[in-house]
Amino acid sequence: MSEEADEQGLDDWAAALAEQQIAETAAHEQAAVASPSPAMSTAPADIFQRFDNQPEKPTGPSSIDMIMDIPVSMTVELGRTKIAIRSLLQLAQGSVVELDGLAGEPMDVLINGTLIAQGEVVVVNDKFGIRLTDIITPAERIRRLHK
Image (cartoon, rainbow, N blue to C red; front, side, top):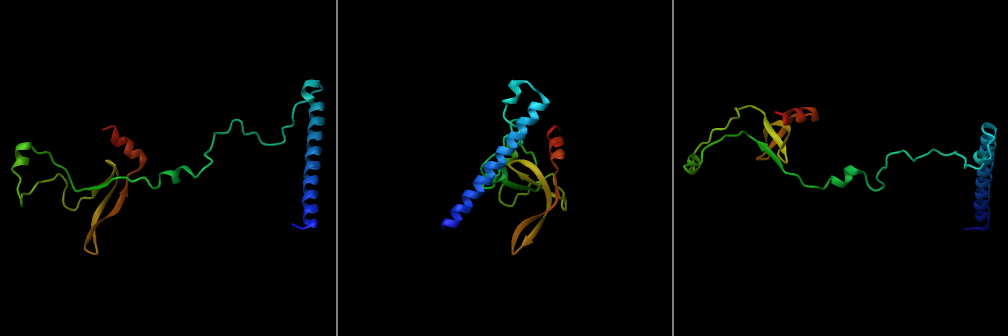
């Protein structure tokens, strides 16, 4: 760093300190006029915004970034049924199990067992997929929990 740049840096610091001194002096004078009590005149000036009552915010990465790599289990459900163990033991290759879902009806998309959307089956490059047609709102999810 050159000598000229050092002098400029010192000048900036000197100007900042002088500005701070002027602000503190003005604040003390204003406090003395508002309340001539000697105890009040020695109080530090409130020239900066107070952060005492502000909720604490995380200083690291945002809270959503911390959970982005957590794996979840996604399930697409065609339908459900209840059968007795006797019927389950009689199942063999080629057996058909009737589900409560209707053909053409949207399938449920569950994340970790919680319904979050509905969709329809699609085939892309000889693989099955699901096109989401309806996202369940948080209010609807809560309503479904109480049923």
